[in-house]
Image 1 (tube, rainbow, N blue to C red):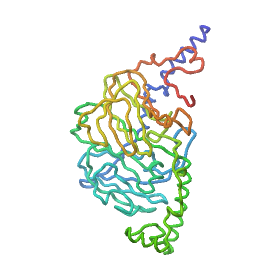
Image 2 (tube, rainbow, N blue to C red):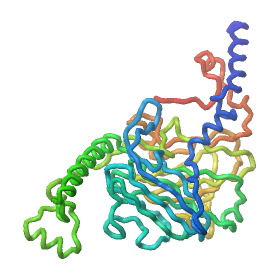
Image 3 (cartoon, rainbow, N blue to C red):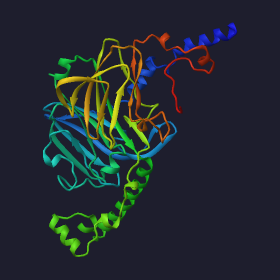
Image 4 (cartoon, one colour):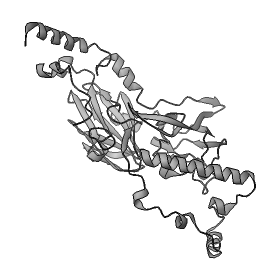
Length: 396
């Protein structure tokens, strides 16, 4: 390489360290903070904390260049994070702005049964344009989440979920592991074709039902709802055809996810987890989707400290953990091995974007005190215009 070319490439490399898109820059870390669910603000009515949630249909961008129409709490995926203290009185005013039915289930929380959000078991569904008020006391301590319990096969993978954190000033986990900051990661899987087709079908079906209701021609049978099992049996004996007889959906018709997300984004738009040497961080993991994930952290073991929000009596170390649908787990990571480390699903079919590797559930643990010179690339890479690690790779 000529001296002029060497000086030029060296200057570009050094300048790259100052560019806003450089991984360790203040601008990059600020943008990264936007990839975690924001806390939902609240007002106070006497001794009650009042939150507002609504459902809308939005167009969501999973990665640059790919969007799909979906459902969302407060127009974001995941929905905003609700944070309260153990024992707080909570009121959530829920507004349905869509043409579909919805409810909210408070997953892992010990709410009164009429507040549990299961349609036709604890409440009637919240119909288009309606509101429903959920009231409960925040119990128990730990990492939980909320999600829609109507049309769950569609609605949860459409993005209708959010974290619900119950804190305690006497945090048993912080007492054992004095962590300085924490992160929330919500995992899900999405079949964009299923979402599009099913969402359109449900919207058409609801339009028909609303027209029939307005004309007084819609009854329990049309809604496929009965007062008892015996009433249902009598209806079948009288010639009623249940929906599962009319529509024989096969397993091939069920969702086959082609997008896998962390906090609503797929790699390379997934969030980074930042840490410093000697620091302890707490990471709250929530599986709001339908698939299992096998989460593996490179270069470290981590401590499993909570399972389904419950502190583990004897935390233990691992570097790969199984996160089943509906599970939450809290881990503590110790800053003991400076570098940039992958944290990913070891089922690599979940590390794809529309079938292409790498993508999906892939993110990085990044040490903030990593010297920039450790990320420099060799001369050949700089000829390609690459200056430092990590790079964004879209096709290996």
